[in-house]
Length: 67
Image 1 (spheres, helix red, strand yellow):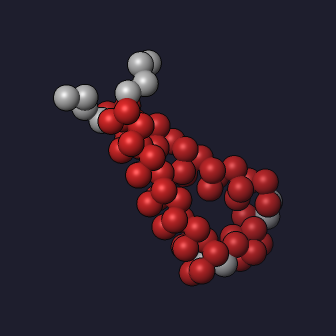
Image 2 (tube, one colour; image 1 turned 135 degrees about the vertical axis):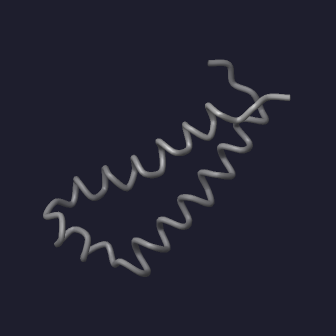
Image 3 (cartoon, helix red, strand yellow; image 1 turned 120 degrees about the horizontal axis):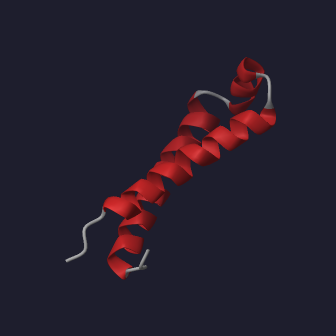
């Protein structure tokens, strides 16, 4: 996989926006402790949230077209 500036730029922008939205939702709206109580495991909630940020960012990187 060849790294290119355009792909990295769009993936980085997506990462920052998506991460900000998830932080707002988890910390502000849903309350992190409520999620931990619901799912029963801090590690499970933390790993799921990390995957919800990393996987879509990699998909955006992969499907960004190069000029």
